[in-house]
Length: 452
Ligand SMILES: C[S@@+](CC[C@H](N)C(=O)[O-])C[C@H]1O[C@@H](n2cnc3c(N)ncnc32)[C@H](O)[C@@H]1O
Image (cartoon, rainbow, N blue to C red; front, side, top):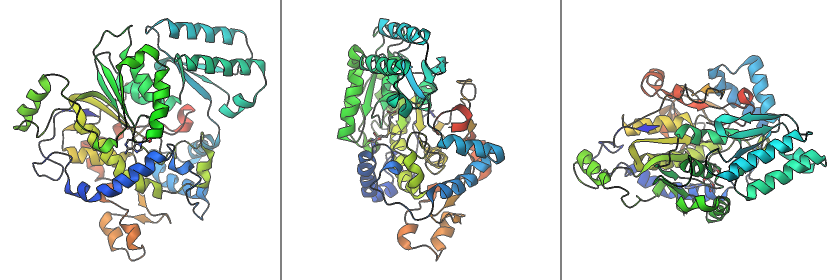
């Protein structure tokens, strides 16, 4: 998403600071509880064995739910079968090698991998130049347990170059946000929910593109969980000198404070637009990675336990927090800056519904960038422009008002459905909000995990 201008009105139409929405104030305790819960989850609440397992067969409900949602993208018939089959198949082993031009380590690492391949015995290797990566057609589990000399060699190679910071195990889909953000050496970047740091390290490498630090750019990497910040720290420490341009913070992303002014023009800009200095401070970041906590149901290939725990209600839980984090991101973004909102969930309630709500609240101050010509090698589907909102019994609810009127649902459950879950008018969704410009990475299209 690109920011055109600071919003001239707060989302509620008042002249207060954009984030001070009375509805948010009322809901803040809920969001804080969700933050604590989300940050404590090791990324995917659906993969957490402590969560109750719903009674009905989860895999069947998953299929029923997503048949209704993704059918709107034409994922039906034989394509649906391929989609489901791929979701059950393990992922290939993928890793990113430090891009060419940063220093000698990445070059050495590539040469060493060429030698490993030349020695023979490895499964098929696919180079993915757009993200400086490779995919090896073997699952993580098979690689770990294999006694084949070539595979043992690959394991040793991955550990050695990983420890040196020249190579990072990372899912291909997770490399897309930073690739699209086109981070440049002068950019001031923020990763709002950064741990374990795959995207942070990828962006730092982009800051160093073209050689030693010549630009003035740097990275702020944040995560709400102290334990996960430790993981982030360890991963970033492997970058050696490159971590000099990194600041790690531990804070709920939805209330990240402003950075002290980074350049003198910021205050002038804020004054010019808002009329009063400080009312609408200009943002401080050129690029923001907003990879929010999510239900993670696009990761069944990595976390098969999701098939035993899936419930669409997790999306209801995540949506308000995701919206608050992304709103804060847009407030911190410079005019002309880019923010990439992403999840590893397939659920439109965590994806297009959040993006639609952001666009509406910002009332023309931000737009979805058309990325249709970017990364042409990447097979993708467009964003949904309509979707259905269902309860856990997979009953569809036409609108928020209709759901509130329903006598079939308990009041406590009704409270979990917020109006922003519902899709906008179809014409508005397509012609005004351009939700179809969103990118959906579906596992069967490019042999990867599900990602938005
Ligand atoms: C999807 S993971 C991020 C993955 C990371 N971007 C990467 O590519 O390596 C989401 C992260 O959000 C963190 N988190 C959860 N709630 C948060 C909040 N309110 N503010 C900031 N971080 C949060 C979790 O601790 C988790 O590490």
